[in-house]
Image (cartoon, rainbow, N blue to C red):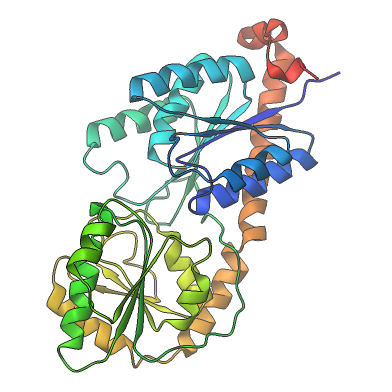
Length: 363
């Protein structure tokens, strides 16, 4: 009797962002297909107990890594040696690096990664090039977040988001920021852009959603009544549905899922001109670090008709909705696992697996 196949997913955290929602759906798929699932969170902070419990209820073996990168690398190899995954799927940059440790421990495993936009591994080009080389060397399968970064043979796929057909009840002048209050997201510049537009006579209201290291200092500095600090929320879509514009001022981005959530709630997006935003028709880009132009762009979006958003939302619904996106994952998984099974049946370098002691053989 064949041993159950094992899928290992590696993501940045538990229950934060789109990759984790995808992981939950993939875990459900694995259970239905008789697969064993392992989920590794590359960090052990900001994790959500509810998400951890949901994964475990689906029979997923959950690990959360702490300590230095060296410690995580060593522990990752041990986890892989214990669980013997057939397929290792990395969702973001740090998980990509850790997936290489898992691959070294289980050379016969198939590698899958979701490749982000051109800011992939920002500030660490040599490291990124090394990871790319090893994924190519090991014939790793790639999903790409956009056609910009897709190579020949890659699947273009977007991590799914909960779909919303909610009717938007827009509030005139409502602007929202959704993201971590950290330097990368540059939330202080978001406030400055809205403030600049207000000084031109537009009575805007700004809702700031998210937590992070900059939040307390920003709240102390900006105590204006038109700024509303909500902290982290489980579902930002009700706030997006009320807003006219979602505002970004990030220093760099991959493909932020808030952009897709904005589209599902028929909300325009204003963002710096960078790869993660540049070719999306519902995103208006302003020159990076030019807050004056950003304020002008914000004012112009207040009067934009919602008609085009309805059309673009339907296109997304047809091509990248949860069930469509997951079907692409499942198809790729099935092909890779079939390849893995045929290799195993042939013996050779995989013959040692017959003697491996792993949780797959435990009841």
